[in-house]
Length: 304
Image 1 (cartoon, rainbow, N blue to C red):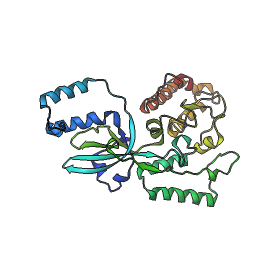
Image 2: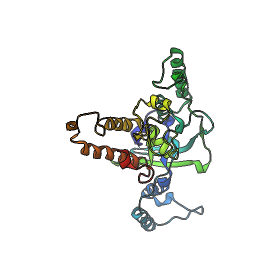
Image 3: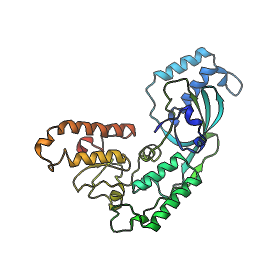
Image 4: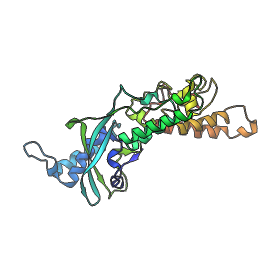
C-alpha cells in the first residue's frame, strides 16, 4: 500500500476505492493540520479557543512522544473542500459482513487474492459482478486452479463479502492532504494487498498458517498449495503465501530448493551464508511492515 496523494483524488474512481485509515494517529494529524491554518478551527462548544502559544506547546509535546502503533480501518473517502494544493477528505468507515462470502482468512488461491485486490481498487457492485461473471465463465470452460487435489478446481470460487458503510459521527473521519509537502502523511493509504488487509483489518487471522506465518507445504491443504502454486515436501518451513504474500513465498521456495538443500553441487552453495542473510532480511522486512511479532511463534531463524 502507499499513501494517498492529492493527485489520487483527481480520478473519478477515487470515491470507490477502499482505503486504510490509521485511526490511532488520525486525530493528532487532523488537529495539527487545523492549528497550522488557524487556532479558531478548534474551539469548545462555547466558542473558546486556545491561543497559538498553548497549541505549540501541545503539538511539540505530542511530536516528542514515541510513535503510536497504527490501528487501521477500511474507509471510503470523498473530497469536500479543495483549495490550490490542499484537500479536505471526509472518510466513512466500511466493513465486510463477517457472515457472507469468502472471508480474507479463508482465501485458497492466487485467483481469489486477485479478486479481492481488484475489489479494493474499485469497491462497487459492478466489480463484484465482473468477478462473479469471470468465475462463472471459468467453471463453464473447465478452467481450473492447478493442484486442487481430489476436487474439481473450478469450484473454488470467490464470493466478495457484502460491504457495509457505517453511519454516525463515530464512523466519520476527516483527513487533510497537503500537496506542498514532499512526503505523504501515511494516515490514509491506497493500493491495499491481501496480506496487508489480513494484518491490518483481519487481526492477522490466517486460515492457512493459523497465525504462525509459515507452513509445512507437505501438510498444508492441497487446495491452498495448488492454488498458490508453491510446492515443497514435508519438513520444510515456507513463509505463508497468504498472509506473508506470494512474492516472498516464491522467493523463499527458490531459496529452500537451492541454497538450503543438497540438490545442487557443494561448490554452487559456496555463497549460501550470504543468501541466507538476504533471505532472512526479506522475511523480517515483511514481518515488520505488516506489524507482526517475529520473536515468538514465528521464529525467523527456524524458517531460513
